[in-house]
Length: 155
Image 1: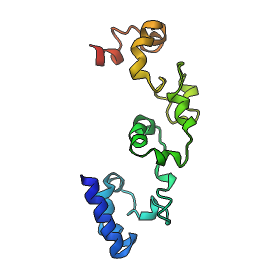
Image 2 (image 1 turned 120 degrees about the vertical axis):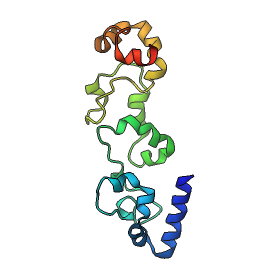
Image 3 (image 1 turned 180 degrees about the vertical axis):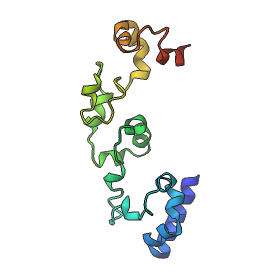
């Protein structure tokens, strides 16, 4: 609901005088509070949006930091076309479409997402794989009855 009001405000402000008045009036604070809270300079529309509205979002706004992989599913579900501006489906399939364990060094050679060595469908399959090959869990987690990662969900 909040996004609807923010969008309406932005459209009205743009009709009234373009992007610059929107940034000056603090609309970005309403629409993108996390960005403003970081102490960055006052943002302009063209920081994120191309001058040609047809193209949409500038790719640099989606800076893939080391933590981007933790929540990329939220962005991908919201609008997969944003991902498709730079990435092909093969990029998703490299992690989510495989059936073998990935070593952290092989999962993402850019180093952005080496913190999670499990494949994309790990949560739905770890019960099966843990029973088929318990040694694959023990290598990193030790005894599953004592491992913090198991106890957190399984008690």
